[in-house]
Length: 205
Image 1 (tube, rainbow, N blue to C red):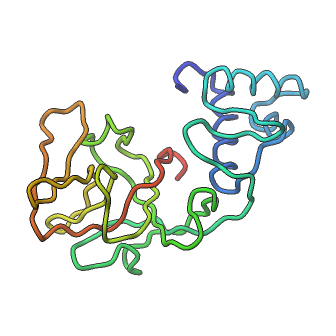
Image 2 (image 1 turned 45 degrees about the horizontal axis):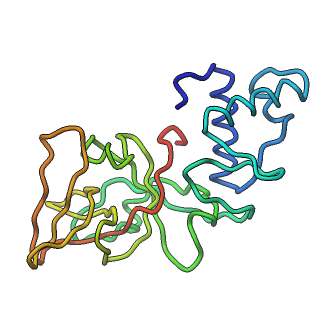
C-alpha cells in the first residue's frame, strides 16, 4: 500500500507506525512536519489525510491507529528480545540467541506472557501475510491450536508454518505462492517454540 505514496508520506507513515507500535502514542502535527519538511499544521494534516485515504491508518477521535493491528492508547511498553538462530534443544530466549531488545507496546505484547521477535526468511508464508524480512512477534509457548501460525524447530532450524493435526500427526502447512513449498508431516518430534501474534514491518530494525 505504500508504493503509491510520496517519499514524504512514507517518512510520515514510518514515524506514525513506529510511535504506535513501540509506545502506543499518536504523532503530533509538529513531528510530522519535522520529518516531511512541512511548514504549517495544514501541511501535516494533508499528509495525514492521504495516509488515511490510502487505508494505512485510521483516526479515532484524536488518536491515530494502524489498520490491521489492534492497538490501545496505553503508552506502556515492554522490552522484547529480537533473537537470531533458534536451535533444537535451546530455548528461544536463551542468552546466546538474543541480538537486542526492542520496546513494543503492551497493546501487542500483553502482560502475563513471554514474547520474542524473529525475522522471517523466505516466501513459504507470503499468502498468510508474512514476507521475507518481516519481524514476527511471537508469544512463547510449547503448544498450539489448529490453524495458528507457529514457530517450530526442525533439524536445528526454526520455521514458521500453519499448525494442523491429521490422523495423529502434526502437519506444518505452508501458505505460499511458491508451489515448491510442501507440507511438513511430523509425529512426536515437533518442537513448538511459540505462536505468531503480530506481523511487524521488517524495516523497523
